[in-house]
Image (cartoon, rainbow, N blue to C red; front, top):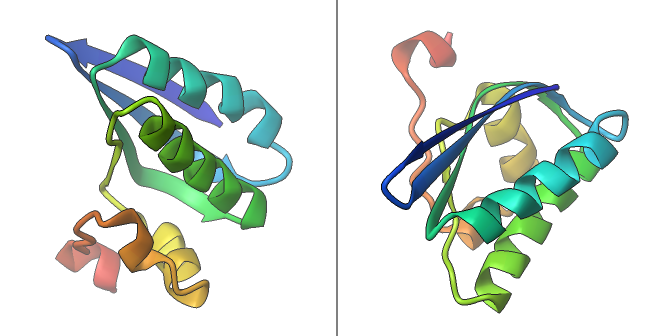
Length: 108
């Protein structure tokens, strides 16, 4: 899993690339939590997530819960087909409250 951070005037984006699975969860967790600590408007870009399992989903739920606990909101953007499939399968798309839009390339 590759994580890239972009910071601009309080807005921070973590671009995740690769697998969000049980094999990468321990590596990703501290990075996502630091995003919440360091940013007033944290955002997670999921457009390059190639695979996600229940451990990856738990990380997203943890980020949402921790953001809420400290009075921040976190946005999930650029949902990859793997992420959309996982959220749909678990009936959690509405829980995050983020708009899920698939590009024409992702729909194929």
